[in-house]
Amino acid sequence: MLPVYREKDTLVHGLHPLAALALVASVAAAALVLENPLYTAVVCVGALALLARAEALADGKAILRAAAVMGLLVAFINPLVNNAGEHVLVYGPSIPLWGKLDITAEALLYGLAAGARLFTVVAAFCLFALAVNPDDLLELMSRLSFRSSLAAALAVRLYPSMVVEAVEMRDAQLARGDPLSGGGRLNRAKAYLPLLLSLFQGALDRAASIAESMSARGFGSRGRTRRKVGIFRPRDILAALVSSGIAAAVVLQSLRGGGYDFFPVLADPLAETDLPALGLLCFSLVSFLFVCGSWKKWHWWRSRI
Amino acid sequence: MTRGRKSGRSGKRGTLRCLRYALLILAAAAVLLGVKEVPPFDAWSLVSLLLAGILLAVLFIRFEEGEYGSREVAVVGAMAAAGAAGRVLFAAIPGVQPATFIAVVAGYVFGAEMGFMTGALIALLSNLFLGQGPWTPWQMLAWGGAGAAGAITAWLGGGKARVWAVATVAAIWGFVFGWFMNLWFWLSFVYPLTLKTYLAACAASLWFDIFHAAGNLLFAAVLARPVIEMLSRFRARFSITFEVEEAGSDDMKPAGGGTGEGETGMFGCDPVDVAWGDADSARA
Image 1: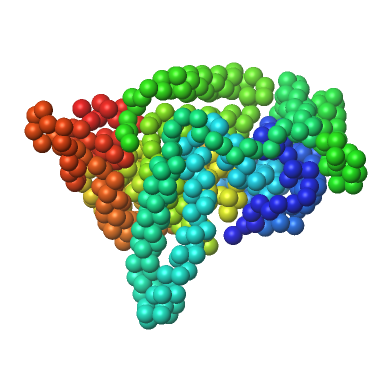
Image 2: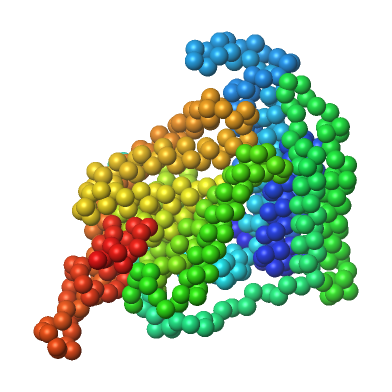
């Protein structure tokens, strides 16, 4: 199981969920849209630096490792399915219904760049998973979708109690001598079956009592109360400005031609770069990283934002 | 507690409907801009993610528009928790997803909307533990679709519990899920976007898809009957029917089981009738 959100004393953890969502969305959009390797490198470093500033790099290691494997898989698949490009590295065999299996330098580099973009997107979502309180997010969503976010919040609360109940039932079954831990796989599966069904029944019973409680408290009636999610503070406005800066950089570069020509020969990454857009992207990321660092060090600044 | 779509809250309903249409127009505009290759919509990775998000929002708004009460919400939450727990428990076995089976069964018993919500929430919640990412909206749609497919199966089977039908749908969805998820991967990280490269992406995930389908088949073969019976009992437990004893009399008494006129309660109508359409017309 991967690590989940933990409360920490960092600026990113203290952001309003909407501001955090905007920040992550802008970083992920930049990684998805901009194919130029120069941009990919900048956004990737920026995402990892944001993770470090949020003190989530150590917690997110498992996610990043999985992302690196996925990125390598992307890098591996692309040259196999695409033999475009002028610089052939390996002349492969001709496969019926498929064609030549040549591996070109351009396709290989495209795969590596695509893998790096995937890694960056996952890093951005990793920041979101580790630094944004899911309760605050669900509360925010409940303003838009009341019932669905309530169902989600209920499920989040039910999940740990279901796990505890499963362990208790397993212990009871073991005490009765059921072959839960020994025997063949089939025997164990058979022994687990009533346990799974009991777990399911328990969840439904709990759902029934929750429903009764909700009805008793006037669920669905007008003018419901809600827990107040933190107000929008100057730090959130800063995060929103940074997100807008990143989004503007993406649009600027896209207007110039966001794509990068990997085929038939690699284009010069600098020649295909809109320097103002790259500058805006770097400035946005660096300034927010600076704000994160200074927030931690300078108490005066911290109290102001 | 009544269900269906007639309510006095027409203002809120109207706003939600407007929002739904606005989102659909936005989706159409995004596709149009993508086809015309207007930056930054020329990046299909972004457009596809946007479309998945909009489609999810539209379907969630559809759920909001229905007059689901506390029991429906609690059941969706409980089923989603069970599905998420199952997915996390089986995470060590690649491709085996009990979540698909639970979504199909939820749709089979409670109808398409609740099945969809259950499937979508399973993806959202289990990814809290397994890792959120750009794949989450796609998984939500794919598992939500499994719930809707379960409802269609019930509708085709006339509402009778047929294990083989559930098992078949669950097994087929093992492949559909994989192909749908490959679509995201293919659009975002594979070049060029041709049928050949898409088939190659599907071939790369074939083993996972086979395991997923086989796992679904196994879960359905062993668990479908008891779970459907359990959920149906739960549905009946909260269905309250009232019968007027004689004309002109105010006395009404509750009667168990069945569906019919004057019925009220959480799962008042047959699950197959609750599919995306108007529940009121289904009752008529």
